[in-house]
Image (cartoon, rainbow, N blue to C red):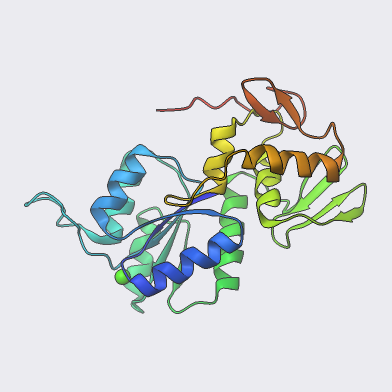
Length: 240
Ligand code: CA
């Protein structure tokens, strides 16, 4: 899962980024509205954590009277981008939360909040966004619970590292969809994190060892998948 964290407070930003990385998310962090706008217009994320009280950044003079997190959110939705957004706000005014939801946020959290609550809301938002009422993902005898990160194979618990889980979850979210090595790396690493060469191959190897050699398939030169390629998912259009 690839997250964009938009937060200007260095301490909150850094601790959130580190905590979410430890949970296996690939986290990219920007600190102002202009950087958030630019990043969201050019890259794809599974989820955005958006602070409402943001400095405008280097917006051209005369633009962005509606700066801050709300402006970022309105611009995102104006581009018909439905990426799930959870608004983070230190303000306690009901008006800000209402404005955030009305501008297209999927949920909100008022600072300070517990990481556990943030994680639970993230899972709920991602579940709703993917149209799944069921919190569990199941395929070919393997079941994963994104909430508890428990994995079973034919009912028997299987222990996975955070990154092995991240690879498996990405594949099981859309059985049949091919994910390239680069797409999987995107889900494992944020900006500035050194990508270990061969890391994806290593995680796939471990997963096959733990879940059965045939569970994850490889289409040579294209990518990895579970299930039948093209089966139940639309192929990624990429780019636009
Ligand atoms: Ca702030």
